Length: 136
Image 1 (cartoon, helix red, strand yellow):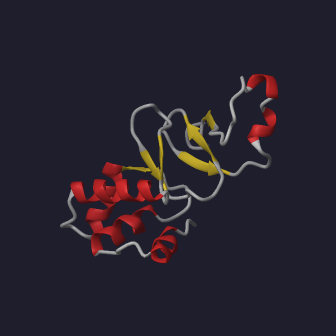
Image 2: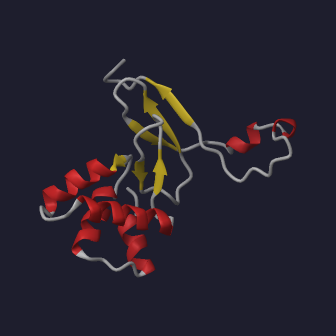
Image 3: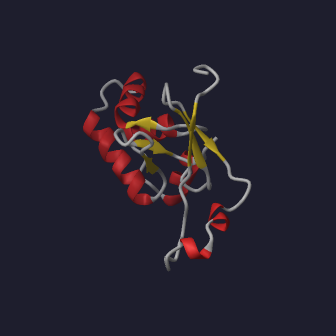
């Protein structure tokens, strides 16, 4: 489970009821929700929460580096609370399910020096695509 709520408390992020609900919706394993999905789930807990409030909270969380934006389909941005845990993504090509996978080795070690074209590489993002068990 992600430790998003604890990290936000430690940082002293002002925890209004709206911000708390957004953080609670995002907290957990394999969470990769769109802003609209965050809003829908937050509204179930706090019906008066506005879409703008959700977008603002998500923007702040991204700016703080506590949530990362992920785009696996080239369209919808999804929000990942596991910003501090190195991981890649496994995406179902049919239904779009996303799962976090944790690398056993450093993906940069697989990139030969001659393929770096002089770049100083600081990170790698890997997306595995296939069919989940439900779609296979």
